[in-house]
Length: 395
Ligand code: NZQ
Ligand code: ZN
Image 1 (cartoon, rainbow, N blue to C red):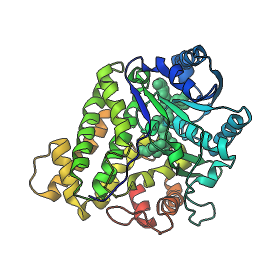
Image 2 (spheres, rainbow, N blue to C red):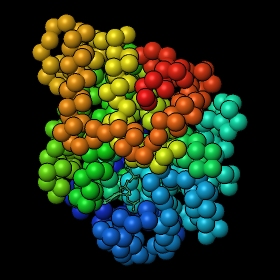
Image 3 (spheres, rainbow, N blue to C red):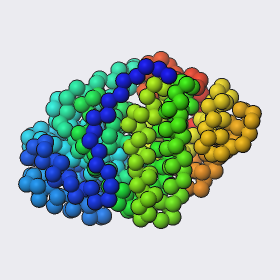
Image 4 (cartoon, rainbow, N blue to C red):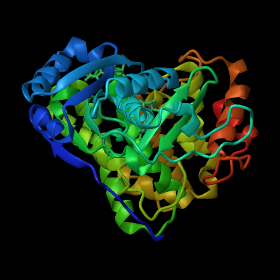
């Protein structure tokens, strides 16, 4: 296990009805709130009105910024940051999925610095690698996830798309940790089948990424990751069949937070290879992040597993109950088991079906290596993936 430092500063309130405490929590951070949300779902479900009532009831003044699109755009964030600054907001409240929570964090940073958010994004607009500029200052952010997937509610990451350049990249920095996260599983009851399944595929991917690519002797992290994978696999099917099953929604929501809060990956090293392959796909074609990962995973696995079959074999045996002594065969069975689970939850899909044409793939592969390769010319992981490898996986 590698040495590591872990910071988890977000105060978490978890459970049915906990959203009712938002006023009492928010009021600790000031008087004026910018409530950041998506364009449709929180109005349709009625949760936006409830939250407004709770915040107003605590004596807070609230401005609503309801323009966040899935795969949030840099231009929308710059606009939100300008409003938060001009209106002198004290706190940003994020009500929505990962896109809304990521956008809220970015708005909180722009409100402080007034620099366009793309200046903080890793990548490069000119074909050259640009290091990610850490964010050191931001307004406090309170998150209320309405969809279980990204873990954004309690981590310091946000993923933003610069729609002009089609660059999708992360921003990060300790200032982006939300101060409070209110996790109320009942808010996820209305998530449609497709996003519920995509979210579960995303949670699963946050766990297998460093599990497959990082240090082998991180035994505590192995057990945590395997337990969370088994939990998501088990409860995804239940939540899909019974969207208001509290037990299933609660298990999935808590797994989503734990998967990307730093615990499962601590001391591991490794790489988020599948994410580096996926981000340019949703950056260029606006597809769902979780679905993109589910499309790529089996082909990505088959492209690399022979270099490190023992990790795939362990996942197969401990997570999917594969009974096979030979590592190579167990690894193949593990990949098949992942594919079968994807099929069962309805996320087995193709790039073509998501509207991504073959002739777009070379440019997307070049972008994947430019941003995900951090200027090295390859995406790190089980093996180095150069542009030709990435293209082969996409194809
Ligand atoms: O658009 P609105 O009206 O908000 O509706 C959303 C959206 O259309 C809808 N939705 C959310 N909660 C709902 C609901 N519909 C009905 N009932 C509810 N309770 O679901 C759709 C998808 O929402 P979105 O926020 O885009 O999904 P997700 O949570 O999967 O977030 C995806 C974004 O997060 C980034 C992804 O790249 C992508 O941009 N990620 C962020 C990470 C992080 N911050 O740590 C890590 C992840 O790996 C990921 O990259
Ligand atoms: Zn993800």
